[in-house]
Amino acid sequence: MQQTRVAVVGSANMDLVGTAAALPRPGETVLGSDFVMLPGGKGANQAVAAVRAGASCVFLGAIGSDAFGVTLRARITAAGVDTAHLRVEYGSSGVALVMVGGAGENAILVTPGANEAFTGLTEDELAAVREADVLVAQLEVPVETVIAAALAARSAGTRVVLNAAPARPVPAELLAAVDLLVVNETEAHALTGRAADEPAALLELVPRAVLTLGGHGAWYVERDRPAVHVPAVKVDVVDTTAAGDAFTAALAVAWGEGRELVEAVHWAAAAGAACVRKLGASVALPRRVEIDELFSRPA
Image (cartoon, rainbow, N blue to C red; front, side, top):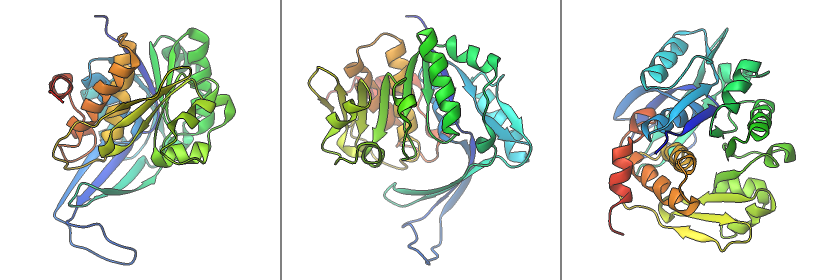
């Protein structure tokens, strides 16, 4: 089987992660139990996840000129991601403040830093997109950058997977270039204004979509085909922070390998389940052997 070539356009952040028995309410201070500092950002997470799922991956994004930026580049490169096109912008790197509660739920505040300056893709960056089998993008960098990457991918026959997160309006120009949309309930509502029990509404925007429902699995919908529900893989949940990133990356890798999309969604669900068993974002992203183990587990 040929290795999938993935290009990821997105954010890189330093994640400052604290855990506590319960998340604080507004105005409340709680005592935490653990703290870790880990590389993150949806773009960097999905790039690392793609490599661990068995792909080769080039990451297009920006880090700051601060100490966080040095660490981010070193960690992402060490994970096997091609960072030759990773820019350095003067100033701070993106930072995510992550609070994780005892049941695995989380609250996240992101300050974008260098990610906001990631604009004006160069010809070399666009060439890296065109040479990939699949482009994976999110919405934590300027949408103009995502549009430019998606149009370059479309012109070269590279499949475009958009993880429309965080929830925000998406220009019609970008949606028209998307082959597969991946959203959770909040993001789906932001795009369609419909309830989460209407996944087919996403097909008014794109030809194919996956609606993720956490512990309730996911819906795969495609024009002119019946909707398919894919159940979640049951595991003990520790931290859900990077589950969506593991899911999206594994889905892109499996589709690039030539799997039917329904099977790819099942494999992606196994990746998400493998991820939530560990604390943290990038460190929890599962390797292919872990995904395969859960994927082959009897229902």
